Length: 359
Ligand code: SAH
Image (cartoon, rainbow, N blue to C red; front, side, top):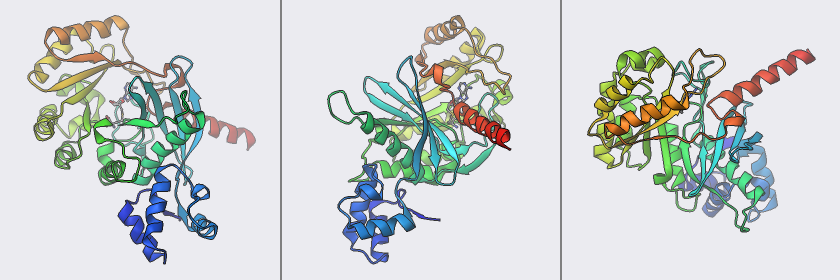
């Protein structure tokens, strides 16, 4: 196994360089090249012989774009990222007026078991390392650089959301390491104010996160107004009651001064009635929060349905009438299997079919 240099801080790379018999400044140079998205071949300030040696023993860019699909509707790009061990994960690049936002994965698969989600169908294969998460961002930056900016300036990812496959708080240490890497001096220097972390509601880790002094936006997948409905679709609701989740959110708001975002995927006959909206409002009253509504994206392997536009507007109006801040989340990349886990599954299935054909 090659040494993964991508997840190392500048200080760690300096120490690593010294141990490898190199001057510390080589570690610093490698750190900066990595964050610029370069592999060893492109690290032009390093001697050629050193680059060759490093290629044999270390990995600088552990994530490659295996396939990409561009939405004809809005230019959203869906990536399938290849990892060094042959696994792959998904990422989605969206263009907004404020810049480019990249949705990244934190695990290969997921073990949370939400009934509507495609990422969790085969459980969790493994955690991603901090270096792999950074590698997703660097791969997207290379993609943007190759495409070039309209004004000749290479655009870069300015916002990151941890909403791809995986439960970020189930891979706590590597996710924290990744967040710290984002703001290392000399690195890609992405402000943590531009980072959102989404959790299905792991209460102890939400409380830990509040103490980290990492000013990310916390998003919580609620998807229900009460425990009874939540338990029907999210196994994690059997571990933590909604009251405990909401108390952990209040704690996060108190500690960080930041509002919490609740995600709510509407499903016909499950959580989308006016009564559900009123109950949700009563649970959230007085909280510094915002609700993001989306119609549930029906996944082939799952029996849950989405809702009509009319149902979304009715739910939204009811929340607004109760003075709860809410919006309907813009759906992007609807034509390219934008929803979690769908592209990875499809590619893996197509591959299995092709292999079966050959065999
Ligand atoms: N594990 C984290 C982050 C990954 S999922 C979490 O649960 O928040 C990102 C978001 O997509 C979550 O809100 C998740 O509930 C939602 N999601 C998953 N499958 C979906 C589907 N089929 N339709 C709509 N939203 C879905």
